Image (cartoon, rainbow, N blue to C red; front, side, top):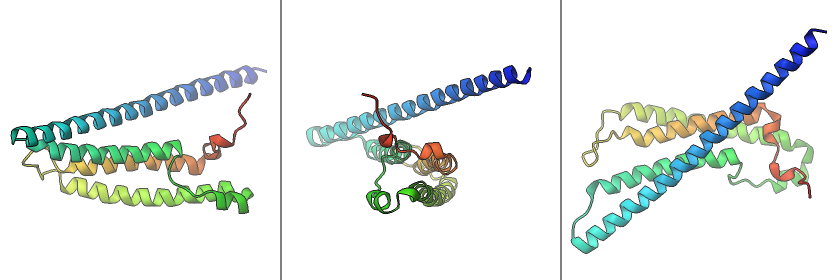
Length: 183
């Protein structure tokens, strides 16, 4: 009889820990969204200022081109991880869902395995390039060129975790659009 209350306490702690983990992850992804929005605003401001200075005053901000390029790389790489998390990436699922409805979970796992393989290749290449370019300092900004490749490392780690969770956890494979909404 003592094991039942202990089990319920343990289950309660597991639910509490799970809720805290979900809340932390949602906060982390919200932070990534904010960083992406700020990066976009900074890029727009840099490019606009540079255009105004070049055409209006025949001068310009030389580092703005490289900083906006760095921002674009980070924006694209973080955006790829966000899109994978939200399951909004390009996919043609009508064929598999129509012809093989029972195999859809298996096919989704297979597609995430392919994504995992591609993301691991991205990690390997970006990590090697990042390590090779830490000492390559830009003349315009004074920043290492490795920051471009660091974006690939960060996003590939995030996408690896997402793909692994979706391969291992069948609940993560459910499409939220398939759930019945109460009226």
